[in-house]
Length: 250
DNA sequence: GTTGAGCGTT
Image (cartoon, rainbow, N blue to C red; front, side, top):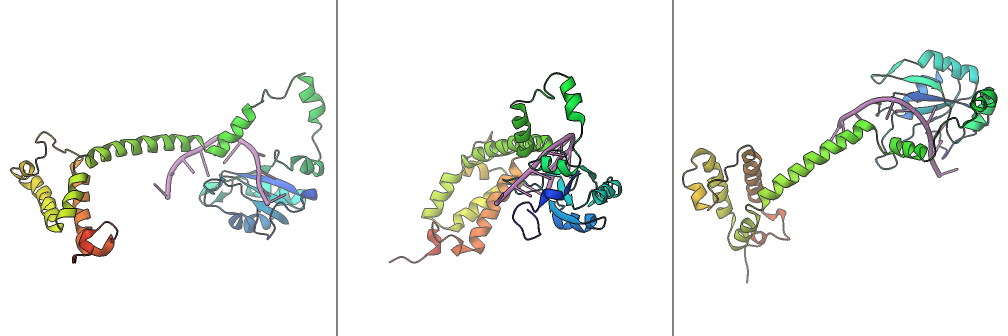
């Protein structure tokens, strides 16, 4: 894809692809085009993106029309700081169009002796390659680590919240059904007073005296208050399950 | 809103 108005690769018959590495995740083809176009005729700029997230994968391909210009771009832009990151520019080697590009790029005579001289496959890549591809496509390693941490955090949060929910959601909703915000506000007040004078509030609410929220107190109390405020400020916010929205009944 | 070695789309 490119912003050249064409869907798919242009005529890459006589183009020379450059691989741009270490670009910022926010860098787009529009950002790279003017930069590379200064050194020659840029045919296309393509930034592979994640199919799921749609975000940049951190590298791009710039196709030049002429090799000397591409080489000049490599020479000039390699190591250049773009969008706060030092990019790496080099000739692309792999890819769906690598062969055709190699044809114009003068195929290396290496493949006849070097790789053959080893008398074995260049690399023991069978499905490891796909794994690697999927690995890269899937996400970067740090990303995985981040997801793992986030998942752990979310799990913990869920656990934490579930325990909080099992403390009072049923009664709150039930009470809300029977009575009005007055009670809810009262409950909220009891919570607030609980932090100030936890003498009778907890006993009235019949909450376990030993269930003293230590650090979890802040979010719970805040949620309760915010919830009550939300209902007070916007009484018609929930017409579906808000009986107080229709105060009058025949 | 996060991250950082590498090789690509209709």
